[in-house]
Image (cartoon, rainbow, N blue to C red):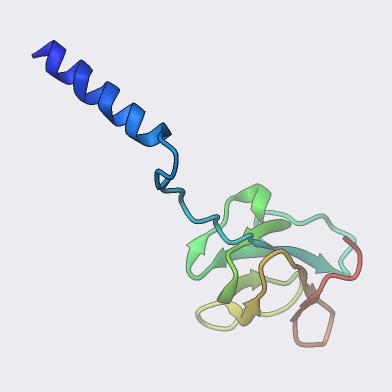
Length: 120
């Protein structure tokens, strides 16, 4: 039985290295976009503010200030400092492009927005 397995493996290896043999390669994954939380608050991003989830997938502490996001239309949940939270949380949907940098900007008295990053 061991000889049969060894012959099968050897035959497979030789076929894979033969000229003109097709090589299956996984498609290159699309590059993610990056999203950074920007606030006018002098306080650092803490556990109760910043980016909280993407498409309802919770973000862990170090991702609240900056995270990677798969390209496409995504819904970002966030908490701006010193602003009331609507029922269900604050959220914005945005069409992220692969390889691009964005920022979610919170400004006192204004709606938050996602825009191309100005200072990376």
